[in-house]
Amino acid sequence: MVFFWFLIFLDKLSILINGVEARQNRTKHDTYNLEYIKYKDKKRHILDFDLDTNFSITKFVDNKICFNYKKHIPQNLQKISSDFVIDNKWNSQLLRKKANIALKELAKEFYKEFWKKVIVISAYRSYKYQKWIKNRWCPDNLCAKAWYSEHQSWLAVDLFEVSTNNVWKTNSKLMKYYRWLWDNAHRYGFHNTYQKWVKIDWYEIEPWHWRYMWIKLASYLKDNDITFAQYYYDWEK
Image 1 (cartoon, one colour):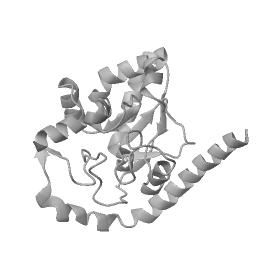
Image 2 (cartoon, helix red, strand yellow):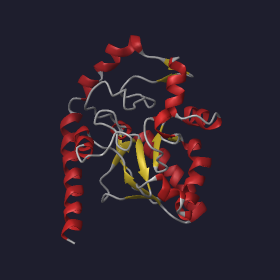
Image 3 (cartoon, one colour):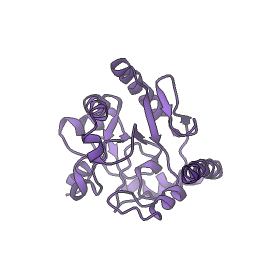
Image 4 (cartoon, helix red, strand yellow):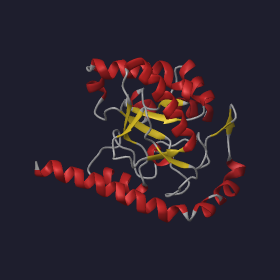
């Protein structure tokens, strides 16, 4: 019981740290926007998508490619909770406006199908919080390094349950949810980033991890049965 309350304390502490850090960094937003000027000559476009700029909806990161700055706070942030979304962290989590609107629309359709709300276990994670997670001896195939995590983009969400691929595969309820997301999430711009193991995506399969990007790109990945990593590195060749 003591350990349980200790975990709750740590979770609340992380929320407080994220909030303080967000307020501090938001004042630096104009400085970070200089990134566009600095990197504009290096911007690469495939199907009109910018894969390199920090604030791009389609900025690519993995365990080899990080954000251009350790800390960045985009504009137009919103709380994720709505009539069809449950924030598992006491209504404190944020997403970028475009991702949040898309999540709410997805959740509305999900509710019509299952009469269940979409539960967000984790959304944005700051550099400091991700570093704290890694320092708990989480291996590279399970946890991204700080500065290399999609959660730092303010576009990624972990849904329903964060456990293992095997737990999801053997849970009929979770698999119903996953199959619906697999068939429909791209229509709202969401992509299941880690679905083809470490050799391709750098991480273990994570049925719960969904990253917002433009509908055009999410649909392209779905239609061609490729992951974001395959898309990025195939183009690099």
